Length: 101
Length: 101
Length: 101
Length: 101
Image (cartoon, rainbow over the protein chains, first blue to last red):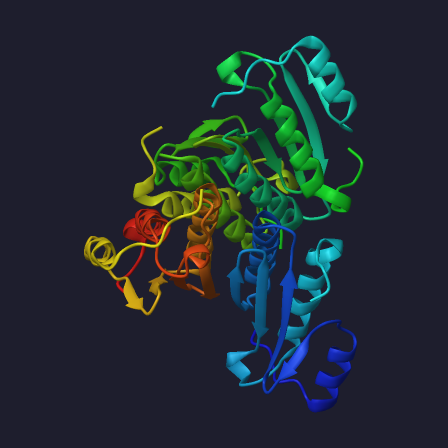
């Protein structure tokens, strides 16, 4: 079941409930910084498992202990509930391990 | 460089510095429990990266959110500094995410 | 949706379509051997992602380049279609990388 | 031990031994395409383990089944033997699973 495009009020409300995510056009993005490559990649492995389950995958870039994430929903040409679900799960999986961006 | 067999006093001192590890003959073991499969496997991914770097690998079993670990050093036929190094790194990587065994 | 217990003819037919899987009571098991720890763990990472998606997880043990897998379905107290689905996906993911057990 | 900057003839010879890697200034890059997200991420997990062991990490971006890799050596401000070692290992780990870019 594809995710429908979120309305502007839905997006603003969902963004307000998150921390450290920035909106850029039809995307939200956040940079996660860890203490080591092993921790950064362990985080990515957890997220990979969750993302496939949600049928919603991040566009992400890893350079050593940094993971830059961008979320958008191609099927609806914008932001959807899937993006905010995944963002929430990523924040929970990063937990206390992540330093402020 | 292979790890040399630890002496009995070295083993006792190293074990005392760890938490939740049990000694069974020439091995130490611990069960890590997480809140989800994704967290358990993310932990394993971090540990896998560290283990290969240390050239010292765990014998481990995963069933959903549980990871049972056994450490020993085949090259020296007993416990070595490598086992306690890896145990310490595993505890740090599990961090606050792990419930008491 | 939980997986229903497979009938004996279903089990025999499914097993016959697989290669290298052995039946032991209410379980099937296989040992995958790779050329390196990195390959074994990469295989496990792929399988972890697929398993969570199928909502059906392996019981597995890793020792360096060896991955011992056991599959069963606790919800139905025996073997189900989920076990054979996961076994088929594991074989495909291991691909040509795996040596004969 | 940091990797020393490769000379121009060394770079040309190393590049000629690889397949699918493109040189862009002080970097080499390649796009790996897989049949599924699970395969792409399994590949990344294998590479992560090898990279940490080599003490040489990729800059990489993953979008579903595609992995875009860039390699360079910051310590020497250019390309080094470490980049070509890692590129060779990545090609081997991708193996037959990877489609032509």
